[in-house]
Image 1: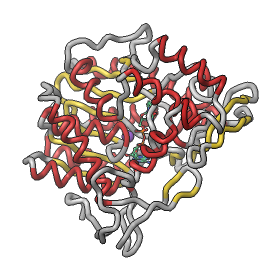
Image 2: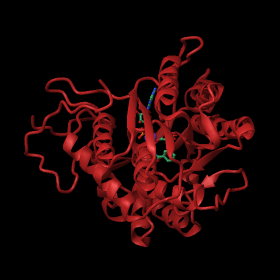
Image 3: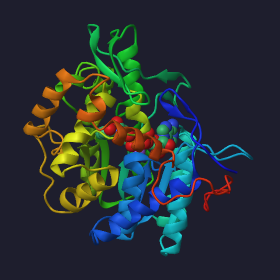
Length: 395
Ligand code: NAD
Ligand code: NA
């Protein structure tokens, strides 16, 4: 079939298998071009099909020749209806990993559930024996709690007072003011339940109970801090409370892992266009200004550049360079004072009329479509494609 982008609000309903494969190939080529990383050899990535998790899986496999198991929640295609981008990304990743002689298997299902944890435990037992790196990169708006069956929803709201600021509709370029009402009821607790550290710890407990963590095993989860302008809705908001919880959980897990000389870290990553970040008000405007400045400075990075640097310089480079709260910071280039000062200036002036010029609106929009395999260089979108692409390891 011929597949075109069909958008509704902040989501794209279709995705393109050839474009997704090309994205994966580009990331693989980038990692190969940067040379080998003396890193982990048996790696579990939870949230492995898009964004930072996919980049982590690719960096482990093609940077360190690692065997990888990837867990994610994606939709396969049905006749005439494309699958989700993570499904096509993983199909492409496995194909290229297998061609390179690398072990790669994937499990598609709810990572929050006991059943999927058990499936992964059994797969590690059968195939790898143990793992030496666990990347936790889930981004989900909902979580069904495995003990109670209760469904929790996360929200993106400020805490305490209404937050009013500028935002942009990146499809139209229209800059407008948005007001977001503060969290109410159990919004904060619910968001912490979904995006905090409880599930990360459950994963690590499940693995360590079965002795599946190798001596010296490391686990890393991803977090975000960001600028002053997004603080009320991000870091000081409901999602920030969840990130605080995630970051605190790193210390709990690190204690548990002492028995095997292992460790647990949070890495604070840069703001990037992903499915998750496109849905947060105010952030797309910030990102479009950020990209403009960082591209001008020559310091712009995408997911793969970020994770390549995380692995080669911090995790396996001998210098974690932790901040005062014990976190790895690969958002260092984003958070540079000059960069933030330049954005704060542009922020005041940004309007629908000038944003295309003072911000990287086109870059934002292109990257959004890239997530779904569209507008990828070198892909012939007029060509007939088979939407029924399968992930080799999933029957
Ligand atoms: P993403 O949406 O691209 O990826 C999320 C992954 O989680 C996908 O593989 C998806 O299939 C999987 N997933 C979601 N729900 C699942 C479930 N119930 N079971 C199994 N898998 C599930 O997200 P991302 O932007 O790469 O974010 C990953 C992490 O990085 C998050 O913790 C996020 O807060 C953090 N982070 C993101 C940014 C950013 O700008 N996007 C910046 C810094 C940190
Ligand atoms: Na991810």
